[in-house]
Length: 314
Length: 254
Image 1: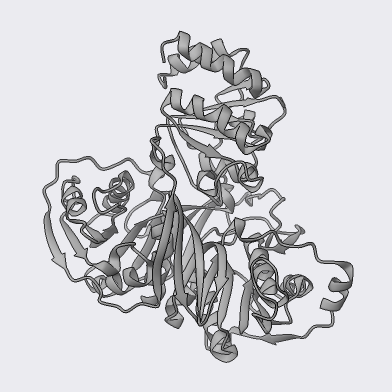
Image 2: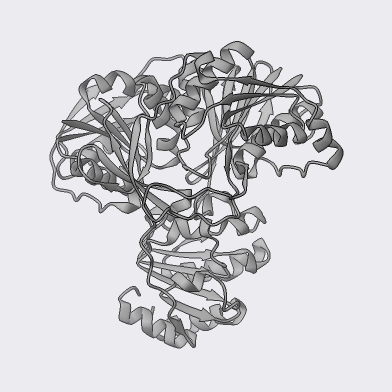
């Protein structure tokens, strides 16, 4: 069996999500190749070649792939599938955008957000925001999966796979990149961060959200997240959203400030190693899953926490 | 311009999900079902294209057609879309689970018959969370797509769409006809007024079957087990920030 992993990368380097999806692919058994589709992505292809257990890296480079849009990815990957039994995408916005197009072209039903691999044709995935977990048997000749990277350990380095250059699709395509506004931050990326500080609607305004959470995140070297309620209220950008309709995170430390703990939010963070909840409502559902709950108003609790962290030399 | 809006009937988002004790699935008996929230956003956007608002000129869309694939009761979901302002509905009656691939194939059949300029769908349904139907439909039709949209600006033969992507926002142009899938911030759907709910009851709904579009809805994937998620052991409380920092140090996460 041969499995193709579509790399998550920024042309310069591969993201940790790629290493995690490689682990999911290895669990299926068989050979694992990695596709790096980008523009001037030679460095990313070289980085992918170092992932342990990768047989070969396919490197497609061209202007049509610069933004890894869905149409060119479909055009690139569908013909490659003649040589593969399965293709695995990270469940990132890039992967979620392209994978179903590939599946439909192959006449395959895709499995989304896979969190467990139990052999070559049996997969585990959450439904209903993680309130139910299904085990699914996929006996289709070709398989298309999006994989939740946080559910898998990253494959280490130490590999030395060959890099094979393949042609980028020529186009033209009916969609064109116009521009982007990426959040500029020195903080770690939310889905890859070891620590996450998240705020909820209790913070009351975007000024308060930033004033309370940013110093704490800076102190902990943490990424900042938010509940859907805080995003809906306009306190935080959508990109911060943790939960069913946002991002899934599993850091070592998750600090929830003023978050009540709606099931949609829990779906995105309940696999964190240690969960801290600070909320003045002692009946908030977040306390049921928190390892350490502090029933207190964040207005006093967060400054006190900052003081204690300082004292502890953090 | 004609806009097609597929809508899905799902368990109401306020309700707690219960897994059947025998692990054979999720228990939906006697529970309130509603229009999928992302589908509701899609209907609202299409109706604004017709009525004006949300950055759209009135009359940009001439007709808004809602389509649902599901059991007889999916009529209610269509009535919901009609009450928001869709002009007419199409119910493709199918019982049991219909996977996104089959839904996309049926919708392709509907699109071939209706010839819309734009199809707006929710980015995901809150039951299976698959986030696949819109993209699959785009591929089957050979159309461009703009998923996870937070802003749609209609232009001459194209749409400029702002997308919610990891790390920020991306803006792309798509040639029409095209597929757009909605993210949360695209709009805030209205509450349908009582007169509009009454009016919706008189709007036409065509009833079709998957076979009318030559689609077999037999699932491709076999669900062999449905389970409750592992329960997290939580619930411990600390009395102060000082105690919290002590505990975190003990746990080795500081």
